[in-house]
Length: 327
View 1 (cartoon, rainbow, N blue to C red):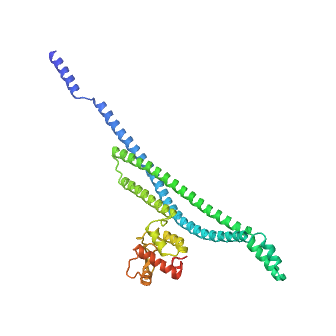
View 2 (cartoon, one colour; view 1 turned 180 degrees about the vertical axis):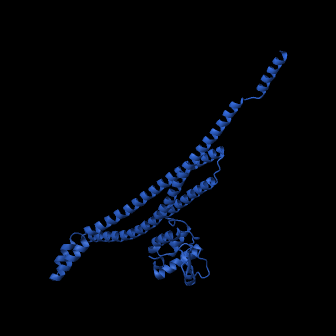
View 3 (cartoon, rainbow, N blue to C red; view 1 turned 60 degrees about the horizontal axis):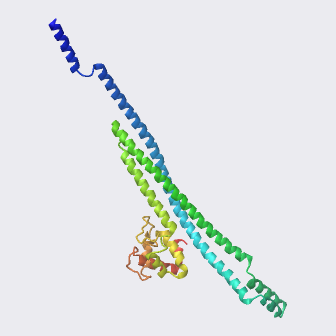
């Protein structure tokens, strides 16, 4: 009897020492496997979702950069139109002012004096023509000035609206990018926890950051062109000093279009047999530069020297107008 009690006690102690029963251990392993599968599925779902969002965002970034490039070209075109309209408005306004001054200086009695002093029908007819021309500020001249002013206002409004739209687009994209970047981090964390290897996730995040930087650079370039990078500064002062007063506005426009007044601007596209466009006014080097620089007192100077580049451009413009720049 004593042996039986000892045996039972021994079996009980052995069972206690063994810990979790076999069935409970199997259940625990199954739960762990199930959780692992669930974690992997969650990670895969998150990765697929963020991948789709990333692909869409990258496409939108590419489109935004394309739109910005087009907006930059449009801004330069509008600036040229503004320059032309400004010149036309100045001419029309001067004509209107001259006619108004004539009418004021001659006074209302001059018509009668002209007609009374006429010695023949032809003199009388001439007096009528002169009086109509000098004393009447024609509605056509007033309408021309009003139309030109309205056109300039419309161009300015169009530019402002385009700038606002571009800024809003870029701002929305940057917000979206921040959200997708955060989701990329979350997806990576889920993947790491589930033991899922994602080789290109970091690379895609780097590409997203590169797109953000490229878009920011495109926006800065657009704003520089929009606001006129040559409106002030040392290069602007050189242009004012070297170009005739009536050509300064056009020179500023050309320098803005060509290089945004950057002395080190370089166009990698070769134009045989002349070379590459270089410097503020993008003069082709060596072909055109070497032909003109000595004539303009800058033989041996570098086209990236802003002083030399602006002076040679002014010299070329004095000889050939704006034809070398396609204007």
